[in-house]
Amino acid sequence: MLENATITETSKRSDRADTVVVLDFETTGLSPLRGDRAIEIGAVRIVKGQITERFQQLMNPGRRISSFIEDYTGISNAMLADSPPCETVMAQFADFLGEDNLVAHNASFDQRFLEAELARVKKPIAGSFGCSMLLSRRIYPDAPSHRLGSLVAYKKLPNDGVFHRALADSEMTAHLWLNMLEDIAKRYPNVPQSFMLMQKVMKTPKGSLPRFWEAASAWFG
DNA sequence: TGCCAGGCCCTCTTTAGGGCCTT
Image (cartoon, rainbow, N blue to C red; front, side):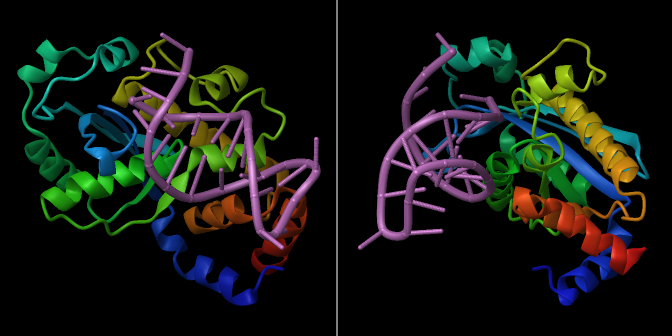
């Protein structure tokens, strides 16, 4: 059962909900704990429902990437050889990010790499992470799949046909996030589109979601 | 197209196992 204190916390922090940075990493593999590194970062900043800024940069991980990653991303070893090192790029990205909250598709993956790469340049993360995949499982339970590309097709979201590149994926994730907020607003017009509230939705069991919205509407409406 | 890891989530569950999703 939702506690009143939880809702109060959401309300207090809602002033940061107007701005989020949606990001996506391309990497050498799946696990920074096993030595994998970032090779590209893409991000867009959303302010009051509009994309206002973009960040994209390849980065040199200091070693060659596998043929699988070359094929998967279209990023070649030659492209990375001419790119600045991860530390330089991540320091620039930390300045771009500031203290904004973050959104990513399957955010636990991008969060692990962001924390690992920023730790190398001794930059903290001030914001919280929201996950578009977890939210989509709640908002679109009947979608054939909750992969990013599948959801883009399912919701007919804007895209340029490029997948598995950081800026393209972050832009599609941003459109997905905004689309979900619009659909939530249509379904529950009395519930504010707070970033912190969306985080609570992700943690709400699917079967109790209508009761969650009912409680949120009652408190905020 | 797969493997690596890890968190979430569902169910034939909770003293567990396996699918999904990210590169």
